[in-house]
Length: 216
Ligand SMILES: *Cc1c(COP(=O)(O)O)cnc(C)c1O
Image 1 (cartoon, rainbow, N blue to C red):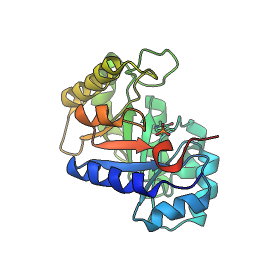
Image 2 (cartoon, rainbow, N blue to C red):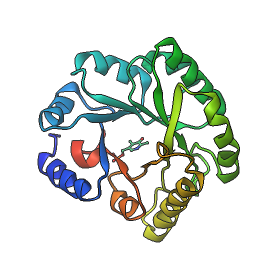
Image 3 (tube, rainbow, N blue to C red):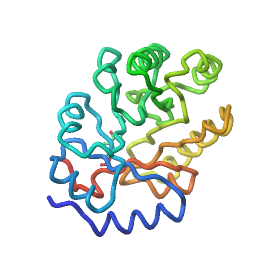
C-alpha cells in the first residue's frame, strides 16, 4: 500500500491551524515509506518496538526525531537512549529511573511523557489519577529524564462520547499536574480519533494507518 501523500498534506494543514505536532507512526512499515514522507517534509516518526527502531534508525536521515510510543521494557532503554527524541509511554517510576540513568550515561536529557490510563479497557498501561499525583513530586529527582507532559489512549470503540470523555479526563489531568512551563505536551489521538482528541486539547497526535495504510 503506497503512502497517502494527499492525506498527509491535508492533515498537516489541519494540525497547523491547531498548533499540534504530527508523529507519523511507521511501525511495521518499510524504510522506503518513511523516506517518502520524509521527503514530503515530515521529521517526527513514531515506533513501538525497540528492535525495529534500532534497525531503522541508522538507515535513515539523522535529523529525524524518533518517538518511542510503545510499551518500553527497562532492560531495553539503553538501546534507544543515545538517539530517542521523546519517550511517550513512561508507566512506572522504575522505568523513569532507568531512563534517567541511561540518559546520564549518554550525557543527554531525554524528554518523556507519563502514560495515563484513561480507557475503560483493563489491558492498557499507565498511571491512574492517584498514582499520577504520587509520581509528580518525585520527578525533580530524575533531571535527565525530563517529563514534559502526558500521553494516553482512549478506548477502542465507536462510542464517540466515551472517547471524548476519556480524552477530556487526560486534558484535565494535564491542567492539574502542570508543574512548569515545560510540562505541557498532551499526546493523544490516533487515526480514528484524532479529531476528538484535538477538540479536547491534544497538541501531539500519533497517526499511522491514515498515512501509511492499514498494517498487515
Ligand atoms: C499504532 C499506534 C498508533 C497509530 O495508530 P493508527 O491507528 O495506525 O493511527 C498510535 N499510538 C500508539 C501508542 C500506537 O501503538
